[in-house]
Image (cartoon, rainbow over all chains, first blue to last red; front, side, top):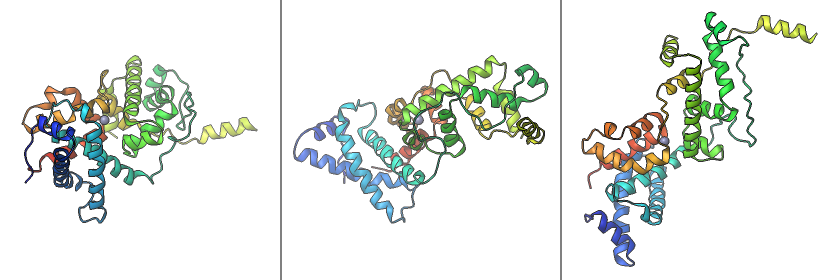
Length: 213
Length: 91
Ligand SMILES: [Zn+2]
């Protein structure tokens, strides 16, 4: 039976030297041992020989992070929920990496970012108005992408939206982190959205156009 | 000669193909907001959000910025769902 602790007790026990801390750590370990399989069985079959090792590794890393980050716990959730959140991050990053490490993604690695985007899809030189008259909406959109997105942004979008790669893995290959990559993608989306608005293109109509295909 | 080749290329160039990125990208633009939380900001609030959901509160309405990020970001959404699974295990 794992004794119930409120947040203050968890913090107090984990911060006090000796036996209180040892038993709090061992209780947290038991809770993780019990809860992690419920979360991770959606990712890896519990019958998989790697499953137990994964759980053990995740618990070790989680306990370390919990101890190192105790000062950041603000008590706005239950302590165990906070610890589970940390375990989830550790576990899924490991699983994502295992799943994607051998999958190639074009154009992410390698340093110097070229600000002008080279574009493999044909684009037209006609003005937006003329092209609209020709019904050549695709050409306009492709030109807008070519003009508004850098090669790196474009490559990241391909990996994320077409390959379905996790941000975490794409970020690592780009030499950045997930948070910065999310911001980069948000900036790119906003930029495109504003450009479409300036060109008088309605996203709803564009959505219709693509859903009819 | 070079001009002739260009001319040939133009004549025989395939019809414009749809850039495969366009459909998912346009869909994501529909949900793009001026202000969006980042992954770190969402991670900081994810435990609170999940507890609110488990208490039966309308967390999506109370914390719309978190919900919007979860709808947009597969990494955070997976973490949120995994967290809920873990929380459903009785103590
Ligand atoms: Zn995220």
